[in-house]
Image (tube, rainbow, N blue to C red; front, side):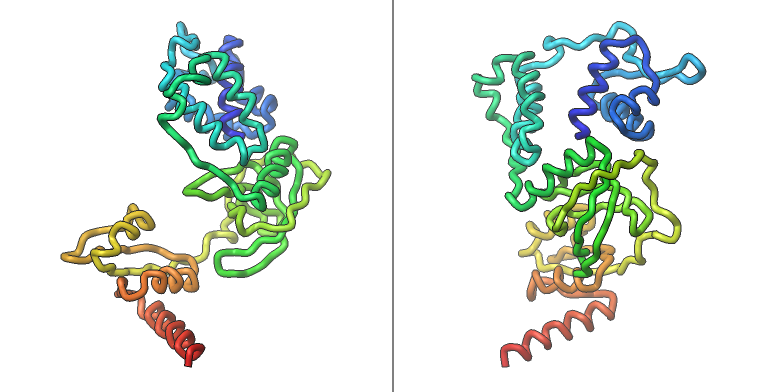
Length: 296
């Protein structure tokens, strides 16, 4: 997992003068590009790391920097501790070792009220745990996985993939990997994945990128106008696409599935008007008519 790896990279740099990205990539069984992304995140977290080019180049902590518990308050560590605790169920206990290390660094985490100031709820259903847990293992061991997948449009396919990372975003787990069927990087939503099998076949980590012939399908530019009463929900669902329009709220959004666009419009009932495109208007009206026919 990325958090575990970033902590490992930091500890590695604390114990060595200088180390190359290639060495770190081999140590953590990821690509050099992944190591550089991790280094950037560690820098953003306030731990200064410098990179040097040339035959004697590599990565090292800046001169004079060291890490101890004096660098972190109980409040600082409690946020990390509670994040790990919130993820513990989904990770199958993997975060327990990190929690133990933090509590050893700052014992007050186990008894102070600070431990409950910030609460992370990253609970995962039992069906998703049955997928997430073996995926952690497959990623650690670079093993190819196979599964059935249903796309947002409802298309079911059989996939084989080289799993590289798991993401938690907006209440859902996602798998990033190299899809052997599409021959390109893909991201799969765990809730749409079934029949996971972890094979004994191993793979060598590769640089992930989409090939030109596997580009994303053309999107549908949609312009919607919502009643002001729907603003709280609209702001949550489209946080970066909202703009006020008199007593209404306008949303301009690109959808990659007409079926999904229709489902979004219908979910708001009479509180939304489709301004464009005309094709979406027709699809919404046809769906409403189909529903009406069922209740005749």
